Image (tube, rainbow, N blue to C red; front, top):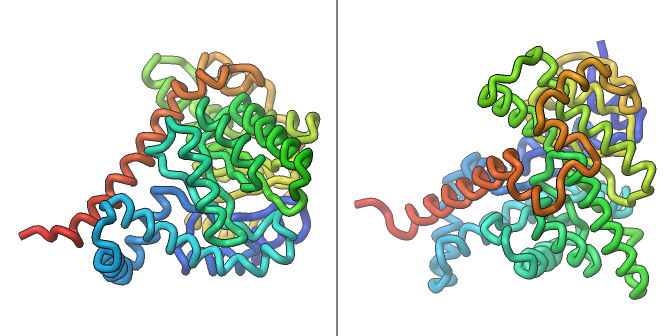
Length: 354
């Protein structure tokens, strides 16, 4: 039995491991398994704050006393910044070792800014200034694609998020490439930048299951576990054909296939910590399978779902249609709800219940 499947993967293949959590204890353990990156989004930041709540409640009170004019949201986001910078320090050794390609902590732009490209770019530049190894998450929406190119051109390494489909990944990869080309043309450095394009593979599976149930589509249930894997593999082929500098990143895990079937490529796998624990306990010997196609019969079965066709085809959606894709709406709403939950934590400190 392999005692450390994840470390074996990182040592024997080009595939990088990042940790889908910025909780300090989880990140430290993941680094021990070979992780060279981590991520933070509103849901993850909320979990990190709740994992050490007495400390952060005290810090919220301090910030409120130091800056009495800040709003609840502004205080909450200062805490998110502090959580993120603290986690980024753990990754500094990997950042130096990998010359900026890994060793990064992903910070997500405020989802409440998702309709304003200029505000997203401004916040991306601010986050990138907090630590040298910060990478900034911007959603793959119509507005986000515009912001992704501009922020990249200004030297910000981007992690594309709220992304589930081949067309979103390809459009985002092209936007990053345009931004890199602009930056090089202006004499800026791009060699040390480490952009990635996330496909939230499990959230695509989730949406397919929702659609099948909603529309009464008859399909083998196990085929639905392959939707995200199939989309990722197809996008990976396109990225290699087009020579995009950005790497693909798989996130939002729901099953073991989203690990075993994606090993071997020059990509990033970013499972939540609980899934990493499962993978470590499995004793599985990682094998390079990224280039092995998904069973054509499974793909054909999935293609009976119209939304899977939109997700799987390279030109399946226009950027404007990204905004209305079901998984996009679900995910944005969850991120916005996490923002609201953080506001409530701050509110309970500023205005305690009687």
